Each structure stands twice: as C-alpha cells, then as structure tokens.
Length: 201
Image 1 (cartoon, helix red, strand yellow):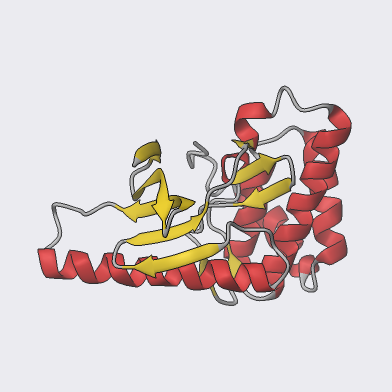
Image 2 (spheres, rainbow, N blue to C red):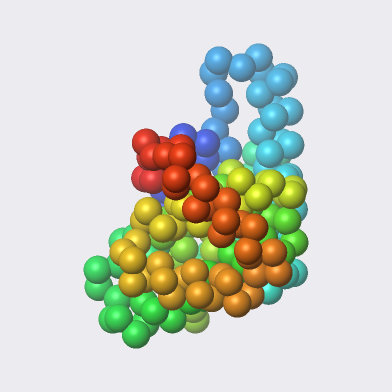
C-alpha cells in the first residue's frame, strides 16, 4: 500500500480490495490508551464514521463509495482528484463558484439529516473530473446541535474569501431546512469571539 496522507487520527493509503483500487483509511492507535480500550475506541469510531458516510450518501451528498469496514479500516472508492485547498488559487472563477455552491448545498443536505461534519474546510472537499466529493468524516457526528452546525459554516467561512463564501452560503440557505437558526448561531459565535484561535489546517 502507498500512503496518500497522514493525520493525527488516521492514515490514508492507496491499495486494493478484491482486486479493485481502493482508498484505505486506517485509524491510528494511541500509545497512551490501554490496549483493549484503544482497540474498542478505534473500532467504534471507525464504524460510526462509515455509518455517517452512508447516511450522507443516502441524503444526496457525493462521498466515496464504501467497500468494506472492519477493525480500524475503512475501504472505499479511490477517487482521482485534488483537495480544494490545494487548487483554490488555480480553479477558474466560474468553476470555483460552482464548487462552492455545491459544497453549500451538500452541507445543507447533511445538516437536514442531523450530520455535523466537524471539519468542513476545502481540505476535505475533493475536486474530481466528475464533481466535488465530501471526504473525511472522522470528526463527524449526528445530533441536533445548532452550535456544531454553525461551526461547520464558520470553518468554511474562515477558509475562503468573502466572494467564495457568499455563493456557498446562498446555496446552504436555499437547501437547508433549518438554516435560519444555524445562521443566527453563526452570527452569535462571531460576536462573542469564540473559536477565533482554532486551527483550520
């Protein structure tokens, strides 16, 4: 397997599953945790991430197709493309506007079914010849937290310029069933200055 990327919680590899090219996400073991507890936490979080991906997909959000989930690994469709953060300055303006509108709509579709992505930035939007896909649900959760949904918006807002975000938020507002309270909470968060030092890497 060839490592594609590495983060604090997981590594992504390019490999094979039943002779089909696959992206393999493997959660990283934490040395400070008791082995049995560590294994249990990793397995639980891996299954939870896969379930949320499946829910997002069934709600109309393009995500990599799931192939197999087991232990610490998720095997999924290997997509060819680049994350939006790497091509943000190279994408033609019309194409970028379309991508941001798609991302706004996809976030609304996730919020409509209770999914908060948890790290909704250009680094987790994969631009491919067939459109943009939402990736990395490692911090995602399902619930009714308006605060978590507002933070999804805040992360994107701090990651792109105002023109790109305006198209994003228009699409979000149009597709979001409960957009108003989320937008109100976003404004409240910005007024009180919380999360201003949060890393967006």
